[in-house]
Image 1 (cartoon, helix red, strand yellow):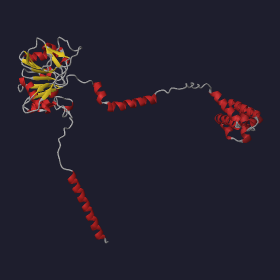
Image 2 (cartoon, helix red, strand yellow; image 1 turned 30 degrees about the vertical axis):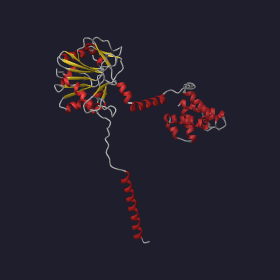
Image 3 (tube, one colour; image 1 turned 90 degrees about the vertical axis):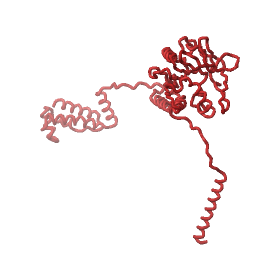
Image 4 (tube, helix red, strand yellow; image 1 turned 30 degrees about the horizontal axis):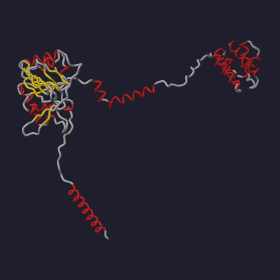
Length: 383
């Protein structure tokens, strides 16, 4: 088979293979679309009322979000609305007084009734006590909410229940025939304004998926619109989503562990390397006790012991000649017997004695070594 024919056959086989794969793919798969709710990022992750604020703004109302209640910065007006998401028992007496003064002249306040707490309840200066609201430890029960054209809804299923005292002026109540007098919602009159107390505000939040739709649900939007009706469109809606500031240390512990855990391990490793090892005690090093003369004597004994006595003699002879060059340079310049005669004349010694001192002693004659070193030292001292 020639090369062109072989290449043609290979090409046809490849085209048939590609065609079969394409046919299988088209028969097995079909194009479709699916809506997927992406996880929140940015402000919606920490502002649970972000969707409510954006909805109000798009509806033409003025809305602002705040982490904490700041009455001086908010500059509340009679037609404004304030929604407090967190526990109203955390308000200071000054904040309670400021809110009630504002509500009395036409403000609209929305509160969430918290769970009963013996430590927090019973404060006569608290906001709930001033309004005549009493927390209850009764179990939450669902309230049916029906919107025309929409499936029936159950609200306040996970909220708290509360009751009202005799001084509360209730305009609306929402309860059930559960056998007690607890409420899931109430609208109270306070002066010219109104206060809405809700057992739960889950339907006002951003929502988190299919099981917690939040404001994505049409029925929840209708219920929210009814709650905001008293001052809707009249003024600014202030949404307070986190009155209690999270602790810095708690935030660092929960979210900052990818940073502080490696740093902690590095610190522990460094401390382990730097710490003192435990084991047997080592004796203290001996202090230097010998003087210079002792070192010289020990060095000389070492040389003598290993047959290096001529080095000792030569060191003393070189010391004598060095002083001779300074004190009698003429004698130092001579050599042999002439030098010995000059040294003897200078020292007034017999020449034989000087010659004996300048002769190298035998390596094994310790007596001659000591004698000639003694003579050299005497000669050096007399120069």
